[in-house]
Length: 270
Length: 273
Image (cartoon, rainbow over all chains, first blue to last red; front, top):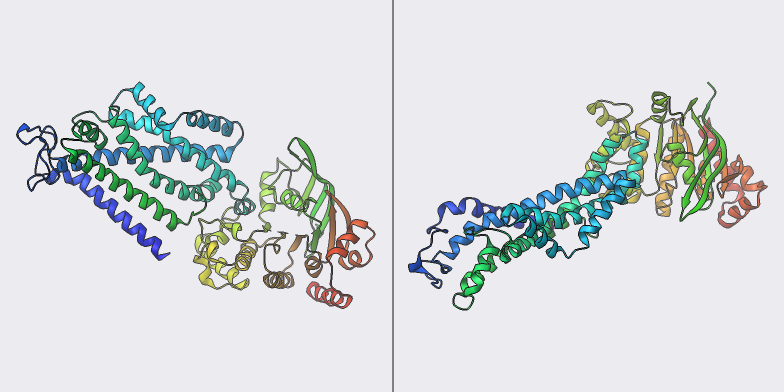
């Protein structure tokens, strides 16, 4: 129990630090992250530019910090949206059952019939590039998992003795929904959400890498890596350090998901 | 009003499973008087839990009447009357840990019994809850624990506390000891017998364990394939059953000797005053 809490505290602290860097970091940068300066183009890491500079002479470290907020908050937005939509739809379908349940499950099956990233690319391609559209396209991919998970959890507890006991005690449908079903569904779904933040950040970077996400000169990490791939041999530090930043953030969110699962004791359910 | 608490008449219920129609309860009729403890026995699948679920309103009957304290529980027009009646009905389930919402503490779970029908103010509710915990032999500190932190027997005690909280006229016990260890079973049975001694609530005790049932109950109903095949005093059924199925059931599980039976009978007589 104590170890689980320790993991949770550590990962939450790291995420708070990340958020701090993403929010107030851009105000304290030593160099302009968006202003080209050809005199300093493609310089390796040095005392002046800790992580080197890119093809337009911009400080890589500064651009990583400047891009953090875009990557982080876009991913959090996607997860928050799919968490809300998926949980509400899943619980409603599972609790009411009948036609509503059938329709929802068929719709999720249609969405899940496509390879997820291809679906995201297709949706983003139709909507056009830009952060808003790539957030929407990832929501279209991720919501099904949440709806199905929430629905199956709801169905499994529909006949649980504690629900029967609540009915015998005279609890109405709404009381049962909000006091009995919702709290027991939210915990496992929350763990999935925490574990998904990392993969959403990666998918977002993937979309940007393909030119479907962030628009230049936004320093979104995937977009930066996409640009940097042309200089992989001349200036590997651009793509490597962005990759490391991505790796660290994804790891921290996976750590949060794992420790959250231990703390909420939903092992075996997911 | 007579002292009949519960009157079940021609109750029928069928399910369809895999395209097949299963008649779980067929024309079941019986009565329960105030303070009486009746055992409903039968093998699994005989429909005894369905009878309990129908009485508790967890399932809807196909036909028949369930009359409690003079009110027809299946009457859709008399909602207020049915609610008032249902507030005096409680049920205890087989799986003690799952009987409590994992998202609530035991104390909150017990208080749920008087939140909806009776709307007792929070402070008074809390006091009542602590008193019930003491009554079933659990320390007051358990009020802040979750079901997962309690043992099966403790959870079942807490479930009994929740049932008692509503001061029920009728208590349905659906296989409440079958998920417990034998030693814990004995403790829970002792608690139930204790409660019988001190209150005039009626109990419908459902079990496949004929020894346990005959320890607690004055009267037995034997159910087989959805039908009540025998209805009579415990000793009569144990010793002079006229029904082949009942005799097989008794022969297969019953081990208590005559002297023990007499002792239990005396204890019950004392309990009934």
